[in-house]
Image (cartoon, rainbow, N blue to C red; front, side):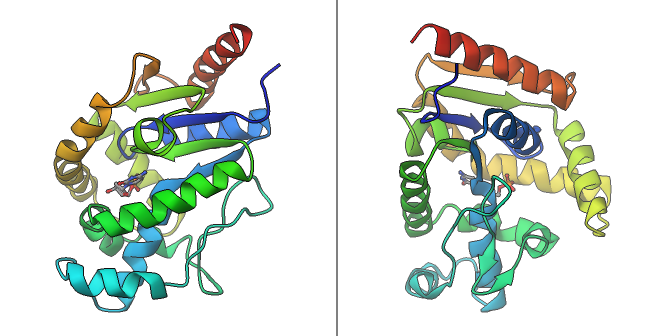
Length: 229
Ligand code: DC
């Protein structure tokens, strides 16, 4: 029996299949799926719309409390992505948002605001939390922690397919270049975070696995963790 008060974290770079795997795992366990990348993207979209330059940190920090974003559960086991009353789920995938989100996510005040929201959500119920710093910083006491890895070209192909499903076309070269650029921007920060993971983290290389195989691998680990409690 998997307890219903756990937090399971899924970390590492974009396009590794984290989102799909987190969603499937949460659905399977009856948990909520917290996709924290969407939160950083909602903030980046709000800044774009308000014409903030990404290096105007002082302006961004004073604008931050006025952004009408507050994560809340939806009816499908996830969280709404609203700016005020507007559902911005498709807007947050736009290339313009992808271009700045990495820099936005480095602003300490942005991180501390979103981390506070994320931690509040575990107190409201069990979670599969998908992000970069879930198992190390946000939920260090999580019961099971996964790190996903995958080749950049495969990640670009997956991202292109996701964008295509939303009617957005971007060339594979541009997507891969953006992924590599963001990996590099995130790297320093990620390296520091990864060092803060303990020995309890489970690394999964997803590039040869189908979503169902990834889910099965995760479930094996979750069940064996539950059985040794
Ligand atoms: O997974 P993604 O590329 O869509 O995430 C968007 C950005 O958000 C990415 O540049 C890193 C950042 N991010 C973060 O810093 N911490 C998280 N928990 C989730 C995402």
